[in-house]
Image (cartoon, one colour):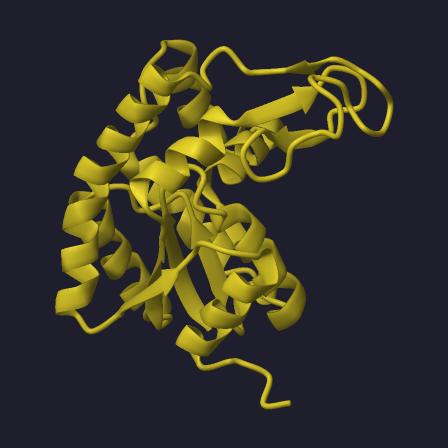
Length: 218
């Protein structure tokens, strides 16, 4: 199973990807993780990425694609992979197709985790994190029992500075403008699967497995 997960911030993409990893035994390939690892190990691509990052520039697509090519050629990706965080735009999607063709590992599906804008806004603006133990709450969906106090350790619950409505609305607009062309790109190729991603985590995962045709018959 070779898939790309598409989803806005707050869509639960990371949570569902991890459940797929556990169930299917295939790696989740995050471009952010690849970059950090390559830089830490000092690989040729990592050194090139570090030069760009130190200069405050975006790492070029050819470097990222090189890292993806190396990662997907590793033995643990022989039976499939979950790509997370790439592609982010049409040019990257087209270039990725070329890399996957070279590897003889064409994409099976691009899965869009579909969540209503207002729900995304509540998920992101409602997040609160315990300053003591790091436990995460949501004032709309998973509130603490008492005010702004952690149920577990009694620590103060804080809101990240960038979890305000104005900032998040802008992030979601940027995501939408970048992702819409990708949805059309994969839909035209018959690769797009749309999964309603609202509701309980296990319910969403059941929909995801059904869309991918890997649901447990039991």
